[in-house]
Length: 165
Image (tube, rainbow, N blue to C red; front, top):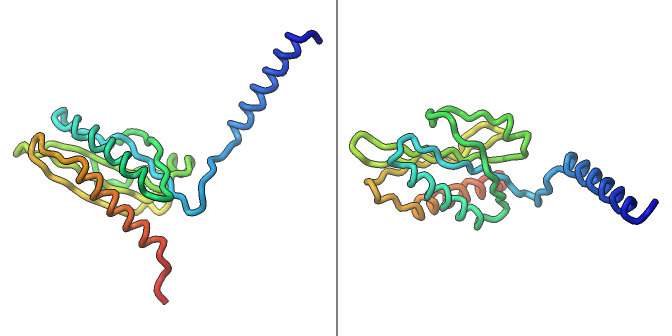
């Protein structure tokens, strides 16, 4: 087999092997690492879409600082019912432990509201839930992200703590 043909065969075998490994590979997680899906916060009114984008970015940035927590993108939130338990079947197949659901809306008096909930995918229970209100253009995304991440860190720490005897 001449040199160029041998090289082409090598590339074909290499590509096929890489595709096979990618198809069967499972994610590698550190011991006790949790995976949280953080989709974009859903804006229910155009007036709060910038708020939702800024808070989503800030939360993702703050979550990176929490130990043993891996952040992945999530599918957009389609429901406007913030109290409804999300469908977790797809998330469990993707090895996601936690899911952040966020909804931003505009109240009749002009205030902006942001509802954030972190759900445990395997138990379908809410781990953290917070709601924030602000005037137009007064939303402080850093405070919201700090509040949510602090509450999540405390909830995760409590889960890891041994049960009293």
